[in-house]
Length: 254
Image (spheres, helix red, strand yellow):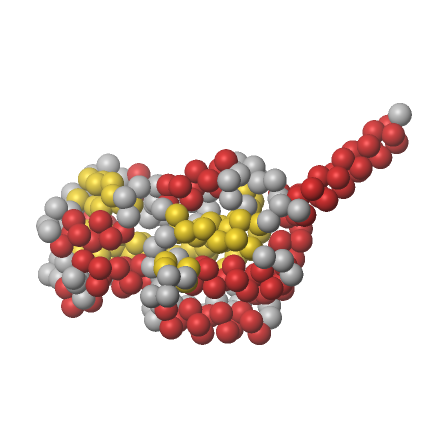
């Protein structure tokens, strides 16, 4: 009886894998420069978009890429609307998604207008901080009630509030900060020295609600092969053209 049950379970898992193989993989990317955006030709572009294009080669199958705001990205991953994304573990707990492979490390920074000198925790407490809805700083700032949090729809809105003096500081990765300044008519000369908050890997993650979850091993293997191939160095070089501040050495972070 026990043997029959084991055989039945094996057959069911095999059938599920066959059906899943017919379902195209869907990757969701944050619609924010430099990670995902539409270029002048109207095509999807960006650092994360490039990653999924290369991962597609190692999987030997197409990966559909969707650009969405952060809240839709997180909701879609939790519900299984999308299969894959690249994000911080803070945003998608183990309950909703499995981390398959590390990609790059990113610094989370806090910055205000030029003239605001931030050197310590005490300098931050009491300030008004613009935080993108659904995001976190990955640091002590998230739970500190002495810092007034002002939610925004995206980082561009956060910068606009900073420019208008409606908040004192914004938080984001160095890459997003520099990519977004021009959108609100600002330059690097308008902001102060960024204050370092945290440095964490962004991870390739697979939704646990995804119909393609049974293909976890294949996707993980393809991601590892990509990261250890010459294509990885090409990807990073191309990424620095889009985001010049992508300066960490990402080659050895196993």
